[in-house]
Length: 276
Image 1 (cartoon, rainbow, N blue to C red):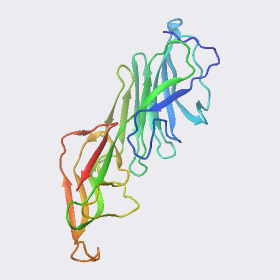
Image 2: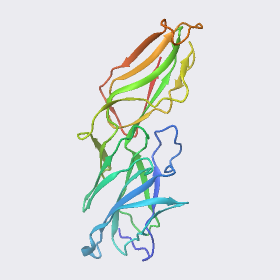
Image 3: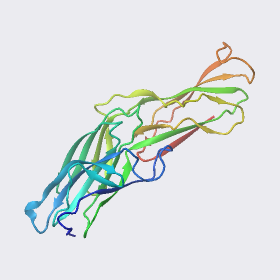
Image 4: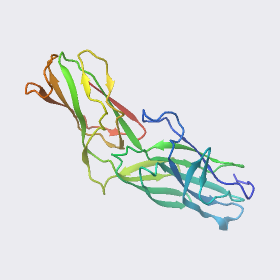
């Protein structure tokens, strides 16, 4: 179909997120502080000579209730537009995007720097040719990362104190390639990245587990790019349920290891590990 809006109608995105993976972020609204970068290709059946990149990598930020770009962008007088979008919080993460928008091909390669310290999400979306007059571009953004959550409890008669939870040899940066032509899809490449052992961001409180207590969440978990799951080590101290000091030589230093590296941590999914 063709778009036939007035000559002064701006193009604002109307973003929503798919069900959030992070417990700390609720709802499907785009988080405060996030920006959106859009690229679009015009196919104009009325004036085929206009076919081509309509705009590339334009940044949008929320202005109270609407999403606006520094330089307004307007709907064409004829033709259809395909949109491809990336979103993150630019105060926490600086993305480098290489856009390829052409007929039947819509792709962006996103160089994503280290996300371990900020635990910042990178989202992606596409909106395909729209028919009729549109005041905005509806876009449902997907998560490009997985969330790992950990819940802990003690199933022994001793007291347990969790020291840390470490995931071996994981990637927390890489290149995210998003293709918007046909079914929307995304994939990560780590050929230019280095894997590291990463501890799950530690809660502000120490985790002392008494015998028989219920599971408690160990912080807000950790966000990772989609990748093969890796070995997880839980380091903890164990002592008798008495007044023994945790620094005593009789306190045991223990490690419990998950070794089930046979699947992927899929983007957009949440994985909950119950540890006892």
